[in-house]
Length: 176
Image 1 (cartoon, rainbow, N blue to C red):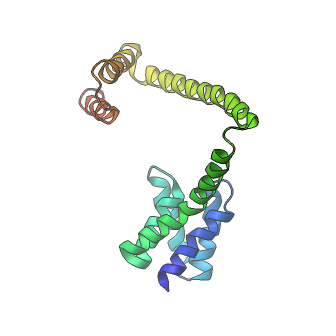
Image 2: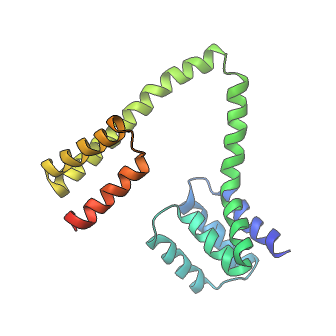
């Protein structure tokens, strides 16, 4: 029964919490404090503070912590699944619709409009990363890291995960 309660405690806020993790925090609080009584308001506020101090989406961090605290490892898995299930179900449903109508001229036109927008957004993000890196590291370090990463991935076919790892080691040794 506890696993069903854990599931509902995170599935319902996932459905109703339009706006992502921060929008669902009050809904999660309602479930875990008011409905099930697993925590006091003070304890819940400490969980929110802990979740905010760690990188990543807050809803899943809170789900993992609360699920583990209430139901152990299986509780954490149930809570994590419940927190992402609404989005996953919606995405699978939308993908099914898109695949059903993929030959439709309207769908083809939509993807024709969306691709350039995504390319521009990625370009703006890349420029923002470059400018931030240039301000923090300087032009030559930024260009050096960028050229090295490009050569490693494109010329020598090194997996991006290894390139990121090498960049982290470089930053830890020479930039810290």
